[in-house]
Structure formats: C-alpha cells, structure tokens
Image 1 (cartoon, rainbow, N blue to C red):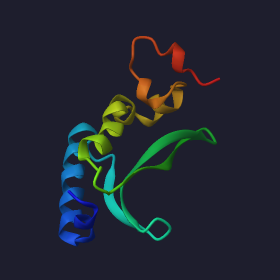
Image 2: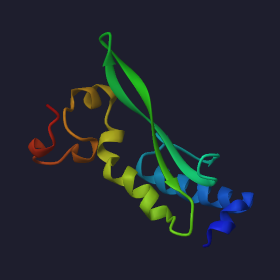
Image 3: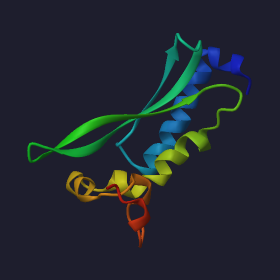
Length: 119
C-alpha cells in the first residue's frame, strides 16, 4: 500500500480496526488504537495507547504510554502489533504485579530476567 492510500479516511479506519482486533486478541481491553496526523512530519501515525502502572503514594497509578508507527508504504500491522505481543504477559498482569516487576516489560514472565533488571 502506498503512502498516498493512507490519506483516505476509510483506509485508515480499516487499518485501525485491523490493528485493534489483533491487539484485543492479545491484551483484551488494554490498548486503544487510533490514527493521528502529525503536522511536523506531514504524516499519519498509528497510535496504541495503554497504561503501565507505578507505585504512587502507596497506591497503583496508571501512567499513559504510547506506541506509534508511521503509516507510510512500509507500515505493516504485524510490525505495529508485535510491540504489544512482546509485552503481552506484562500488560495482562495485575497493577500490583507490574509495580513489583523490576525488569523490562518485554521480559516479564521469562524464566530468567536477570539480564534485564533496572538498577
């Protein structure tokens, strides 16, 4: 698909529906997918908005996080959604489990995550 095709609203809406369906299969209800125009680059971007939890005053607090991908001729839904596939176990964990985890979100649930510890 050429970059010009993403100028059409119906094509963007179809791409959003496709990405949302894939993400909902992996992490149901955790990610909102949408498109956004960037004036600086004059390009459309696919955005995946989700929450990661931190300890704030002794309580879990959701912090808004974003994954974006430029929608040009190289855009592919599998590349965009792979980010969420890597973090599936982490995103499906409870807020308390996310707070207790000290490694990189992509390594959550691995047998050995010692190489990814944040010090």
